[in-house]
Length: 343
Image (cartoon, rainbow, N blue to C red; front, side):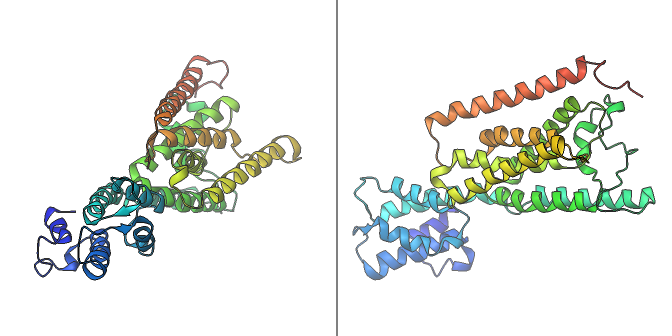
């Protein structure tokens, strides 16, 4: 918040000179709460209000800003300087200032730029190739194998294909499923952690997916954003690890992530070893994207409450990701006989 807005909140500037419409939502919320407790109920600003009462009142208006409830609780406890379970006016203002800083740091996530842009580009590329191929498109294909964007095992020297394949989809069902997953789950992360963090996670999954699939199936073409989608999905596990105590519905999220993991691994094993007509699904690309999502998510997502052990976790995750990516690149470059000859 700007200085004059905090002056108004502290009572040093007449609110008639600064209308509430000029205040950001979080300042309006704090102003209302301060007036409620220290102007109406307690005229003496040195009087203390039970922290639990302030917390309950703030929770009733939590939609006024984008701060998670767990973070609000953490900031309230820090503002209680003498740890007596009560807040006076100055302590409340300490909370208000800290809350404003956190709100400002999360506001960069609005609007959600990356997921929306990625979805629009993928739709545009799909429409282009529908017309360019001049063939009927079904739910499962065909894919434009001639495209300079698709991962082509015979043209691995065109390094951009290890990333650009994410723009190509084989059939409208392939595109639709990826768009739904990445938009819903990606936006949930993007609104809290910012577009650039989610973008890095997504692209790290795309790269890890192509490297994994190229080593597992050296003669297979690869298309689709599934590596990035799985990175977004499993970044939620990294988010849970970092912010467990600050998150709402954490057990529900954990159960959903674990359930998805078990279901996906079971489907991959059945499709690979049990089905009489196995699909062309790039299961190793999914696995590579998932591992990248967890590792990069741990390192790059916002940590609402920093703990000492998490610093070691960050570095382990970062180093392990680069070791895996580096190994994939080295193997792709140093095993020419393992891959088909270049065109």
